[in-house]
Amino acid sequence: MKIVIAQFKHETNTFSPVPTPLTRFGGGGAPPEGEAVLAAYRGTGSAIGAFLDLAAQLGAQVVTPIAASAAPSAPCSDEVFDYVSGRICDAVAAGCDAVLLDLHGAMVSASHDDAEGELLRRLREVDPHVMVGVALDMHTNMSEAIARHANVVAGYQTYPHVDMYETGVRAAKPIMASLQGCPLPSIAWGQRPMLPHVMRQGSDDEPNKTLQDRCREMEADGILSATVFVGFPHADIEIAGLSAVVVDHDPTRARKACDELLELAWARRAEFVYQLEDLDVSLERARQLAETAPGQGPIVLLDHYDNCASGGTMDTTTVLGRIIAAGLPDVAAFAIYDPQAVQTMVKAGTGATVTLPLGGKLPMPSLGLAGSPLTVTGQVKKLVDGRFTNQGPMARGQRMNMGPTAVLQVGGVEIVVISEHVEPHDIACLEAVGIDPMSKRFLMLKSRVHWRAGLRKYARAIVECAGTGVCTSDYGSLQFHKVRRPIYPLDPL
Ligand SMILES: [Zn+2]
Image 1: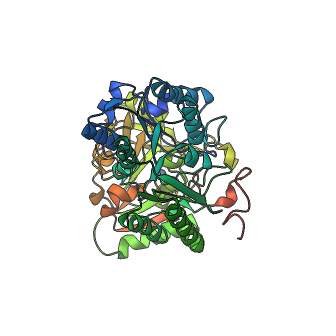
Image 2: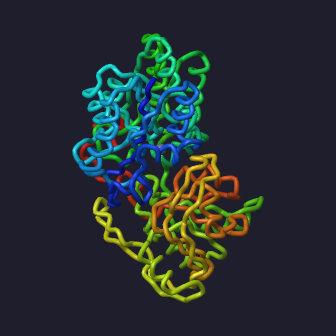
Image 3: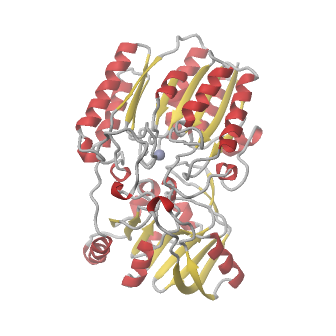
């Protein structure tokens, strides 16, 4: 018995100016292929890690053509998409009994707004009958093509995504059962014209908590897999938005369950709308909370418009600049992406005082903004190679690379400056630069929801700060041309 297991993940922010070369799919180098996939992902808390475990339990022969996973950014080129898709399709063409794919679900390439649908279409050209199981991110913008070409689809039920492994199990188990003689299940899917704000999508918060709880209840009642995708709104493509998919042996029961999930989401659409707050108001609130909030630990300042795990440049300095100007004391900031600034600090050495233009290197044409660096003077406190291993619960055991990294002390603010995009969601990224969050009064994070996975437990209070960036929660600043209309809340449905 032979199973092809592969990964091809990218959340595409069509408003992002951050480029997406093939090396981004390998965390700064070529993505692993063949045996190197096993070394990179066996034993990790990822969907592909689950596929490898289940295949081993079944005693199946495993073929791993490629594991390509890029931090979110602009659409990838046709060359990159064709290369990775080609590796997967070639492996299937060589013959196999099943295919298990760890995909994102919101990938856009130069020629394909529904890149995962196109990958599966190509795979079906190669082999119309092979069994295909697909694990997807909760931010999938689900298409009819995915539902048509896959035999099983399962998506994350948590945000922060701490159930990647379990989702891999949900996607693979019905395929494994079919390999042992069970009939294949059927898929029901559907969508509603709504673009939930990412800042309102956390699965510990309402209304998504109720939606995801209902999916788990359905599975406890025997449905093979039930998923509500909250969708990824920073993608100006026709299919962007909320959808649901249910897999079951009984097509009528699958359809009924899928419709119930969609109706529930639609009825609560207003709760998915994020309320904006002026940055000055937020920072004043943070200053007061530092005096009055009970408990210990830092006040977390979330610079949520510039999250690299949603396609942000991670180099805008609006929030950081106001923090410095306001004179907030005892702050750690993670992080500003600026490889040039890191190199300047490497040359200067630890202990040196430097003046440099920080961040603001990438213009953001979708917002009509040029890059706007912040000139700072400070002391180089630390220089490290930027490699660490996630402690979890999100992507536990996965090796991470933020590239050459510096800590720059500017007044009361310790600024981490990195050379590869990494979102702070794991304590290991702070430990790698010697920062103990509990010893800080304020902790600025460029993140939206994922930081909660490994860092929320340190926060005394949370203040969301509207800065600048292509992950803006202000839909009014984005130009939507291709998304289907009408759609809530862009249109008052
Ligand atoms: Zn996601």
